[in-house]
Image (cartoon, rainbow, N blue to C red; front, side, top):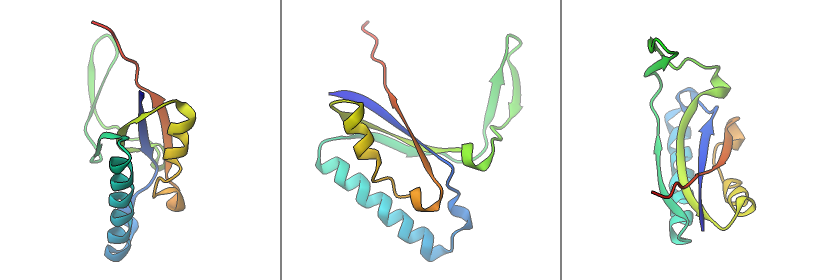
Length: 113
């Protein structure tokens, strides 16, 4: 099994009503439960907006990141899958497609040390 990272972008739940936010969270919990029971879920976290960005040789620190709404990274999962096709199928259950969310699927590279 390989590890894959699902990077979640673009959905802003703050515009939803409290009832819609609760319904969305229940979909997320159900998805995590499904992945966990299948032995595929490794870890994951939501990310709060804001933070700091450090860039360049001078290590310039700025507030941010401030990306377009559709580009904001809201969280991630790490999952086990046999290949990229299986990881892609697993990501199709992402609960926020209906509200404009996007999943980027990346292979986690393992370094032997």
